[in-house]
Every structure is written in C-alpha cells, then in structure tokens.
Length: 454
Image (cartoon, rainbow, N blue to C red; front, side):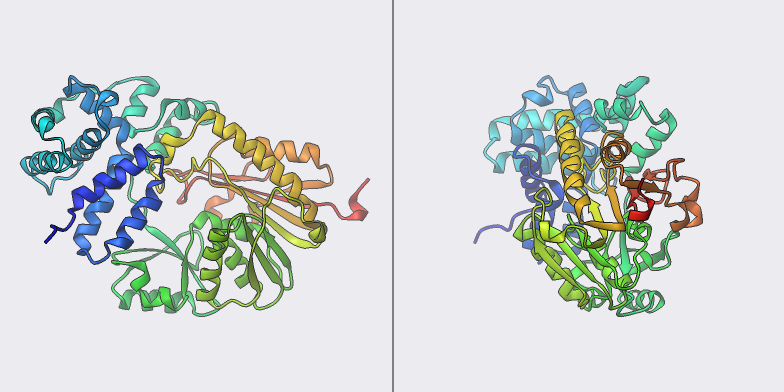
C-alpha cells in the first residue's frame, strides 16, 4: 500500500509550482486543500501556514540561508531550495515544532525526492541555522533593511517612497505579515446582520463586527467555508471591506441600470444588485467563461434575480450599450500591491514593465467603457493597488481626455473614520496598516448632463 503523501511533501509541491513554474499561491493552495480535504484540520492548517509563511518571508529566508550555506540560494537545485526555505520558516516562526524534527523531516523529504546524496548538505545547513538563527546580523539602514525585514522587493519600496513617508511604508509592509481574518458581507435580501451573526456563532464561528460598515463582519475559527450552513444558504459572501466601500461610493439608486465590466467573482456586482432592492438590473461581465461561471455560482447561491453574468471583453466596444448605464463599475486589472498580505507571492512576480502595461490596459478599458455611461451617470473606478500611475495619474489622464466627465468627492459616502483620508481632489487611497482595509483606490467620475456642458 502506498504511503499517504505528507503535509511537508504537499508544501514542497506547492512551493515548486509557485516559485519555479510561476503559478499563483492562492490558486495552487486552494486546489491542494480541496484535493486533500479528507486530511485533519490541523494538517491542512499546517500546509496553509508553512506555504503562506514561507512565501511571505521569502526574502528574509533567502538572506538567512545565504548567511549559512556555501552554496547560495540562487545556485541550489529547485527541490533542495524549496525544502530548505520551508524548513527555515519552521525554525524561525514555528515554536511548536522542535528544531530536530524540522531538520530530520527535511532530510527525509530530500531523500524521498531522490536527493540522498545531498542529505548531508541539507542537514548541515539546517543544523547550523537552528543553532545560530538568533545571531543573524540583518541590514540596519535604508531600503535594504526594510526589504529583508519585511520580505519586500527593494524596487517597490523605492517606488512608494516617492509618495509615502518612511514610517507609513513600514506600517504597510508590516501589515502584510499579519494574519488577515476573512471579511464577509451579509446578504440582507435573505437575513439581517444580527441574525447572521447569531447563526454563525451557533456554528462555532468567531464573528466580529467591522468598524466601517454595519453589514460587514470578520470571521475566523471555522474549518471549511463551504461546510458552513450560512454560506450554503447564501446568507453571506466573502468580500473585502474595500470593495464594499466602492459600492457605497457608487450611490446605487432604485431602478438603476448597472454594468460591472470586470466583475469576477462578482462580490461588488451582487452587492449593487442587493442595494437595488429587487428593482433595476446589474449586468456582471468578465473576460472568460471560467470567470463568468464563478459569478453565476455566487448569483445562484444568493438567490438574487436582478443580475446576470455575461462573458465580454471590456476592451471591445459594445455599441448597443452606448449611453444606457446609470452606473458603470470599472474595478480593473491592476498590479495588486494593496493585497500582498493575501496574495503572498504576487510581490515577487510584479515587474515595472508589467505595471506600465497595466496602466495602458486600464486606460484602454476606461476609454471604452465610458461610452456606456448616460449623461448624469456614474463611472466608478477602483483598483486594489498602491501605485500613483494606476490610480491618481489614471484619473488625471481620464479627465484630460474625457472633459465631459467631472470628478466627484466621495467623502460624504464614507464612514466617519475614513472622511479625513479622502484627498482634496475627492478620491480615496486606502492603505493597509493605516486603514482597517486592504490597499485600495476609489474615485467617482460623473458624466455631465447636456445642460451642464459648455
């Protein structure tokens, strides 16, 4: 009988897919946990923590390994590199596991994967790290110090320093390494927030109200989301508080016709459909069949009838929609620098060139979808990033090239805790570690009515 795969072997497989094959960690991790959902809760928790923790602290881990290994990290064989990285994470950040166990399990895994000739190397490096990990001398000044301490690429820190002070940058970077509870939105078409909270607590879930919105909660302490009765009944959706705030800023009114042009998995589109109170209509679009199927799954679970999912490319003009929408929501593809705490490997995949391409894509989409906004209607622009060119500069560019739009201040649509964070121009840049949120940008653009145009 074949011995079942171990937690550490699964971690190794995930890390190799992410670091060597370019896959995204949250996708590979979710796929692995679903495949091995028969494992005990503590085993799946171990896989999640070691995978996410290793990726989260990767720059620091590589720095530590380079201090103790004659073969530098970049020169190691991929399997050995991944085994050592996850082992160093366990040595530094997991007190519940003995150093001896970490070293022994790493050696056994190296042998199992066909590297018996390197078991002495693996053992020697890890024993040396275990004995001296508290003596590692870290960089003490400048961007390099922050980069190693918080495992943030130096070029991203340098880019932020153009607009953000050093103390704030450190708070942002530190926040990415803190545990992030899951945020949910109550589906008020089916249940009240108080009833949802009570029902979740009866299922053994820890529930905490979010300070920004009365229908938002943070949850933890559950085993598997899909095993929760409240989830299966569509009483709530997993949705970041920042995207809920974007919907608040859209000022949805009864009978509005709404178009969400990059909607998957559909949280904001469903939120707007709920705010319509069984009136109006939301068309939730995305580029691929896979993404529209995700939206359809959430529509079916929530039971909302005034919304449908459509597979459409946002860069291609849909002439029949010209001037018909009261609200167009453009939450566009972006670099994701505001959600690095949730997508731990993203910071290693982003490039300057990639970000420049995203700015051009965003401008292309904005120039296309603005055609759908009726006179007096709203174009709501949002991203989950912290990057001037994708956010503020895109708004300035849009207003210059589309003078029939004006930027409206969203201050009055926000809770008291956020009003002072709205810029003088009227947009909001949320910052993790500063705000109780992901990093997120929101701006509301309104097309002038015919009577307002010169």
